Image 1 (cartoon, rainbow, N blue to C red):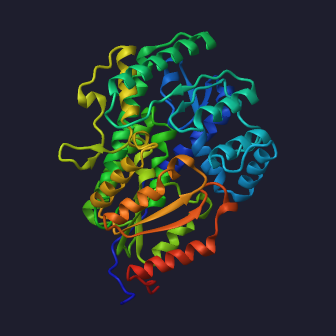
Image 2: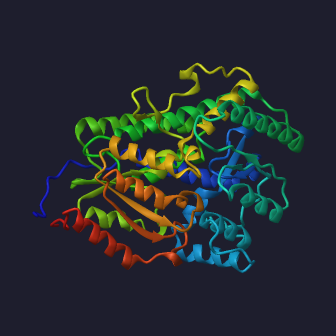
Image 3: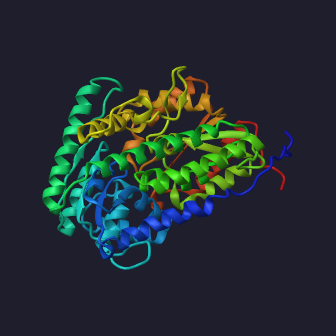
Amino acid sequence: MSTTVKRYITKPLECWAKAKELRLEYYRQVSEAKSQGKLLVTGSGDSVVTLPAGLGDYVFFQGEPYGASIAMDPAFSEECCEAVEARGFARDLCAYMRNFWGSMFLNKYYFGGGGFPRPDFGLPGGFCDTHIKWYQVVCEYLGVPFFGIDIPVGVPGQNEEAKVAYLAAEMNEAIEWMKKLTGRDYDDQKLIEAARNEFKSSALWGEVLVCNQAIPAPLDQRQIFTLYILSLLRRQEKETVRFYEMLLDEVKDRVKEGIAALATERYRAMEDSQPPWYFLEIYKYLEKYGVVVVGSHYSFFLGGTLSRMADGSLGPPRTPDQLGWPMQTREEVLRALARWYIRKPTIQCFGLPEVKSRQMIELVKGWYIDGVIMHLNRGCEGTAMGQMENRLALLKAGIPLMTYEGNMADRREFDQVQTLKRIDAFMESQGLSMLEV
């Protein structure tokens, strides 16, 4: 077939610099929290990061994004992993966790140098099998208090009221624990404001993702990975809401004007889980074939974005305010938070391959995906669970699919040459050859 292709208009995102600034500012805040009189709390990215808001100024140091950042520096990542393995921990544990622990054991903070930040306490939320134990080890090693919140998983919609009551009670217990630990008063209105910011920033990000249904796609996966991280790191902040409002306006304009992330888009791909962070060049390689990766189950759902619309399609979630959920008291906002977390698609599919398969097929249809690229990721037990069942379900649905093996955050388990050969073979099976420069 011809190696020439139609070219779309493309240009850089105007808010790109702001996104990078907000991310780096967050990691600076982590290192400077104590000197500025702020509480430093640590936990997983899917912890209820809004809970400390009632105590006053704080920074929530999330482990997974930090572990992913370390993964982009293979030399330091390997040093971290070896420091963990030298202490007798297994190599097949979560790679994000090993990078985080290694940084702690080495007492090296990746952003700005200096020692590893010592939190005031740990407040992890746990739906993944590693999350609670991850921060138990951290807090025991650093000698700081720890409170784990169990986030219930299971069949979507089943026993939801019981799950909401259970999680809300845990969160209320955590608030009383934090008050006693810190000796601070707790302002429920600050909690309500932080929760509203979290709901709004997630919903706005969901609207941005829906814009990527457009052909050509206004954003690609590499851009999404930079943009989505704020819906995790700083989702409870007003500044994040303002950023996503600005981003949404710009992406809508890109759709209206036909501005593409990839000028030579001719094939739309989707991924399932985390990429090999140390080899994001994989997207550049795919672009040589005119392939744009418009997103993934991981990057679309991790921030809790996208929910089922009345017509059965996927769209941005409606916030509790839009749904009319009361949020005037602590009890009401905790129930709203509990219901919001329980309904997150990532949590709903954990341990249930059939749920994830259905979600992936819906993404393929809604975002006009031509083929799926599946990373058999040994670095994350959670996203790797049920991948073979997901693969079979997608193939049964008639969706072209390729797999490659690796590890999201440990380069020692990745074969770059073999991966590129698998991409070449898959592209050939799809009737694609490399484009002329």
